[in-house]
Amino acid sequence: MTGLLVGSANARIGLRDGIAVLAGGGSALNAVVAVIRRVEANPDDHSVGFGGLPNLLGDVELDASIMDGRTLATGAVAGLRGYQDAIDLARVVMTELPHVLIVGEGAARLASESGFQLRDLLTPEARQIWASRIENAQPTDLYTAKTRELAARLTRDPERPHDAHGTVNVIARDGAGNIASGVSTSGWAWKFPGRAGDSPIIGAGNYADQRYGAATCTGRGEMAQRCCTAHSVVTFMRFGMPLDDALRLAAEDLHRLDDPYKSEVNIVAIDREGRHAGASTVPGKTYIVMTTEMDEPLELERRYIPPAPDRLANQ
Ligand code: GLY
Image: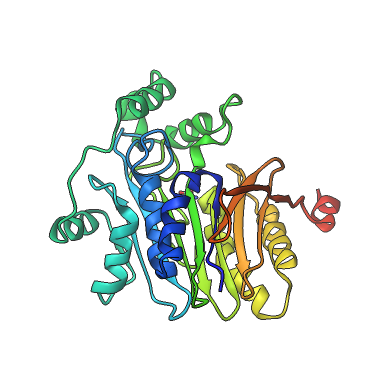
């Protein structure tokens, strides 16, 4: 079977690593990790790993998850500080512990015990972006009611309205037909310390069950958490919906949310036949695809899903 990688557009930098794994007969899980590892090491991607934008206090906190669509085994970390390889650590949780999600100090402890390299994840450039938006906010403001207003202001900058929500998504299908999915992020930039988004929450930002397909999300994680978006897409396919209809229904559910911080949610997904699609609650978004038969990745438009008519009628 042809090896396949599908991901968010920022996965491009790691696609060749993943294709090399698949072309060499490696597993979908190994391919997912190979792609995301490369993105996590990229200091120019301020939404993932090293160089990711920090929380309100200036600390970089990473979230990641991985899922094996063959067995439904999964592992995740949240609020990981000081270690860049969040996706590798999520895999350690999956394979070495009788748990699914390890957070904060426990995640850092596991990284240390697993021999991961400690690293200051805050690059000078990321620090400068963080500081320029924090402006005159005093540390004492951050734990008061002002936190919410501050977060809203920072994440609604009209010049860069969506850059607070970046994340990398990768779904792989290997030569044996097995599917795996992975997600990694530094989370909502300027987030309240300890906030975990959808990326480490299985069913919200990541889900794979290869009897039906897989789905992963980027964008405002709180919305995908509330709708269990990744699981919903896979479940809709389980109940017989074609991939496009499953994505449409999941996006319409997201539009229905009442959310003062409402922002975009983007989904990439594949069905059990390896058909792929990307969808978004906003127009103009892309996703990326590469197979073991292609020389170059293909960047494709995501389908924009507007609010469903009943929602419009209710407004
Ligand atoms: N989707 C990434 C996040 O909200 O943290």
